[in-house]
Length: 157
Image (cartoon, rainbow, N blue to C red; front, side, top):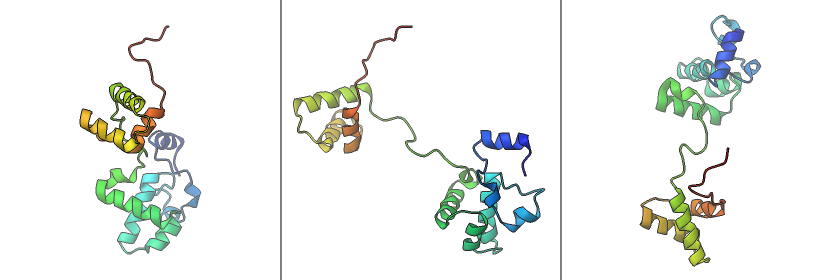
């Protein structure tokens, strides 16, 4: 088991296993001085290592490490692609900012105002032609639903 300082470090780095009591793998129960069920990266590494060495089947690893087969194979793919860094959980969702600047949003709004019947696909095509930016039709539609923020205005203290 982790010491309080190790537990804090694991939590700070997002690698604290939320359900250490669910880990039933023999290595973790027989050698707690080395194997720490609270260390998510260690758990994931051992979950992949044991089946790869023929020490257990994938089904048994899923049971002993309390994960679904889908999770096992997702972790395996991430490990194969990124090495040990792939064992860490990554943020989900958008990886960066939207491509749409205020200028693009204003362009979309004026184009829609000129012809309210324009579809999101038409608007996205217009943005691609004018700005060289590829937007999905739904992104164009979503940008139109957002409230326009006044540009160039400063907030009073």
